[in-house]
Image (cartoon, rainbow, N blue to C red; front, side, top):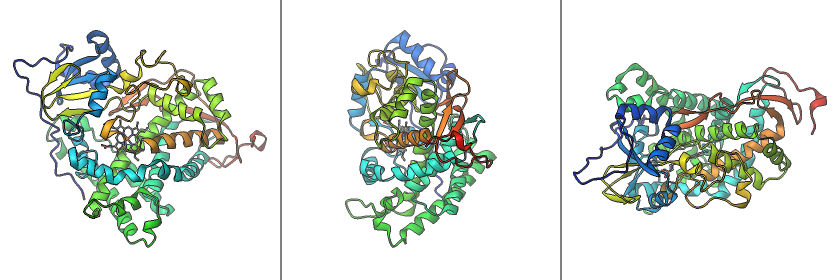
Length: 468
Ligand code: HEM
């Protein structure tokens, strides 16, 4: 089982020289700042930006000094800077027990670029477009299980759906029983939720029983994953298959070396971790916003019969702007570097703030308003809309996720008439490093719009209510 051999120590801290000057920041004790950073990050960053300007320094008990960037010009410098200087893998080390040491998320420099290059073809636009039909079918099947007339938390359902989509499109598992077994095992491994933050802050915590149970869940998921990898290797039709697992098995480096099972497993787990809950949360927010924006909802409905509708794509972009799933990206300086006008020492952790950039009134007039139409005309100035990060670390699954969000939106709205039972906006709540809707996007299906499929409890929408 690919337990990580890497220590959970994340990175070296900054050592300040006598002449080093960091951007200004609050004087509160590091412990207080840490709590604020992990419980109320959005408000805490906004407050500091108001007080100290676009670049400021925070302190975190584990990460040490953190320089937050909110100016698009500085973010551009970071994203276009040398990957030998701005490291991302080091900062992700705490994911190693889950994704394994070979994961593209954990690597830096040449090693990272090599791994990334192997995977890029699997996520090209044409490849993703081929998966749209499957995304639609899986969404239709999921919607059929939703109860009519009974409120429920949509976020739980989008999590189940995006996991199904990954199992079918990324892993390429067609057998229903095996897909179900994988679904259950992967969900348990991902949702076991050991507190990474605690583990990070308190060395030695990985010896407690809870941590061992977590490793047990991963081992169970791995057994199934390795089984799929072995089965696929011997599949006679491998070369003709379009799923990501089959493409990874055929990938080879410049010397012609093919990937071993461990490498493939780590990359599959990475795609699952990076792509499942993020897309599910993006979808939960899209519905939370749309169901409270009647004009936008009506406009999306107008385009539902179109395979591609620019307005639907704009809804996806606007959702990821006003409610970015991930609040910031992270880079660690490999050497002393000039950033935002400061000479920052080696090991400084930089946080380009996605939330602050997205809510900047200079880039987006009326930044808190949900206005998808802004994407039909103005677009966004460079480095102001970065829900998928940027540069050589930009999200590998950005096209996949945007396409999936648009297709799921379309399919759900074609299938059911959905409302928000409580009209008040759902607050954004922090869940690990993501921002999730506080009530899990509560929705209610008023009626089914198509063939009156049976709901989970066997109830069928009255025929008179179906319109198509
Ligand atoms: C709405 C959904 C998603 C959001 C908001 C999101 C966001 C992000 C962000 C912010 C990063 C870090 C980028 C950086 O450091 O500059 C990232 C990296 C990554 N994402 Fe996504 N992601 C999403 C969906 C997906 C999907 C569906 C997949 C794959 C199936 C995926 C795979 C990855 C991978 C492999 C990386 C690491 C790239 C690297 O280090 O080179 N993501 N994502």
